[in-house]
Image (cartoon, rainbow, N blue to C red; front, side, top):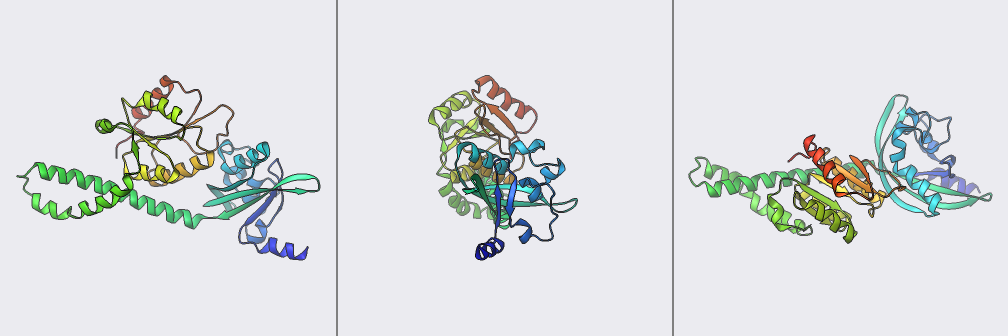
Length: 319
């Protein structure tokens, strides 16, 4: 048993053995972080030093706990007896009293049996540096595409106004745009714009949906007023958001809370004010950080009213 103890203590990531009440029975967290404050409450959020859990005294009592991806994943595992892999989430933890820091973690879980009780072995890896680099690169790509779009508008203006006094000087400034734009177009080609004539519409709505029937319903309700974009994979979701004028996003119930959470975390790091509407089925886990939750069945009136209100409040701003 000594070798197992050494392995447990030397692992480069955190291990928590938790029961169905999210109570931590064993962990190497304090071994790897000897200077972090120790919690007298053995609930996972408290052991981690989660800001929400500590501020509310106990993990599970804060208003935001219902939206926690880690808690939701553990609860769902016990309900469905299903393990999970690489759930990514952002959180704040206390490394000292009144000193929270932002971190990103990737969480996985496996069932084990101990003394006749089924427990979850939850592993947690700190991926903060990786996520910071990812957000930085995506943000730069997004900013570059905004510049290219603006350059394209100026080039169009110059081509239509031969007598503009600074025409030649401005052409030199934006000569690079053609080459850079062609690089972007290779990636833009993956999007599926359902209505090619809708480019003149003011706002673009990205619908993250893999269910064709549900997408058709949403498209029929919205396409006359909004430019509609549909994507089929997480990579396409991100690329479409970066390379197009997306003013709001709708995520449907067929998208897992883990995938939805990753997507929202990434796009909000690129452009913080993008409204995200999350549609879920009654009784589904609400985990995730969204502008507004809608429950099925969503009526056309409710959907259009919510989007209209976002426009009135100025949340659906143009770039």
